[in-house]
Image (cartoon, rainbow, N blue to C red; front, side, top):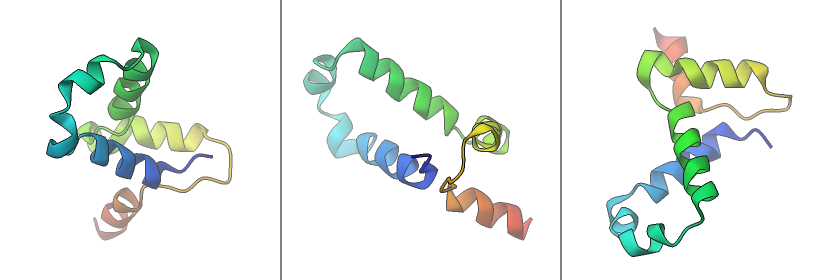
Length: 77
């Protein structure tokens, strides 16, 4: 689906303090899901001005919904 804006919202929700406190629930997740979440978090990391995300966006099939914050920041600066 290539909806990167929604991806950031989901990652933010899962990392919210009220959800991240559920340590026992996270421990019960399958290892593959935890690894996938880690990969997605690494892709949307803001290091290098979202370099990994920008690369993934360029390589993704269209249509794609970009992360609007990055577009906004790029347009301003």
